[in-house]
Figure 1 (cartoon, helix red, strand yellow):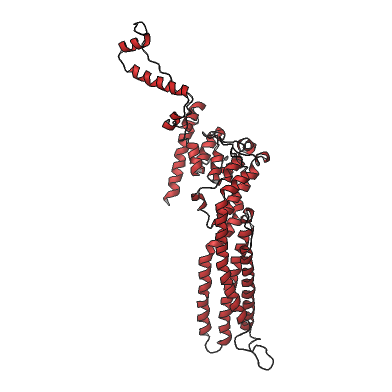
Figure 2: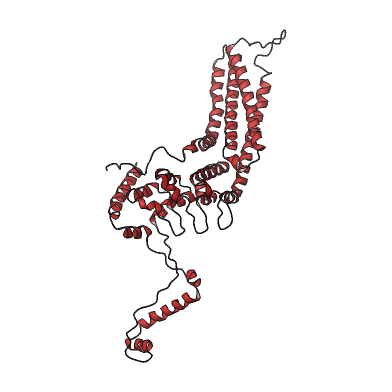
Length: 416
């Protein structure tokens, strides 16, 4: 109960602070957003040219001369004379690019803090044009780290997105190249199943591909790779793992479906009560419970057979990249659904058969057995429902992952 209140208080504090900052001049706002520069690393100094090394050496000498007595400074500055002024100015290092890794806007985008980014952009819309040291906007960072909440803000800024999405970094990677790179393992863990993780990556690639201008979809980076070629290279292992996971799941489920089909097929010819020896018609063929037994047994047989065929089609699929988008998840979803239906109808047929035999005198026997027969159905639903729910949500619910119906960037702020 305390988490939402803390979040609201933090947002209120952010609005108060940022409202005062937004009133400052543009250069001061940019300095606050940029943050302090990173210290120059020793490796950066080693990459300086000979001229820069000489300037660096001169700077060190000047720093030590400043610390000397005034008389020695005069001697050094005038060659022994006494008319020169003390050395107080030092040459500065040039050609050393300063980096700013503590930019709060891009740190928030990297962490997926959508509310923080939204509050900043509302008061200072120019932030959508800001880029980091690698010439990447906040939307590029969101795509790189797979944060759909921040990425969806592109749909609210109108035609300006056509000027932001084509931006390229220092390696000539555009936004589609960034989504072509494999996501962080932490983001992939939010989706259960390697095949569904590959499906989510394909959804991201298709979404960004439709977002950027068509002429940038086949652009090559410095490595000479198009976005699709980079996607194939980066996700090669994920495709292999997804194929292994899908085949393993299909094989195990197909064994269960085949066992059920064998049982219910045999039960269809060994009906409860047996057959009439004169004409071969089942003795209880006019009993309503017997009709229920026959129908449920047939449903179990047909659904288990359909499940076997669906899992068999999974095993014989070609496992191309695009198959993970809809084809394989739908086959797995249909296979699991038909398997659940076959188990349910099999238990119903088993329970009804006892009503046929013990409907007179010992009615409590089929009632107790019917309640016990419900246990495997609920057990299967409890164990396999998370997988089936994930497949359904990832296949059909992911269409609402992008382009949300509710706008969050531009609206009248509520009073607090």
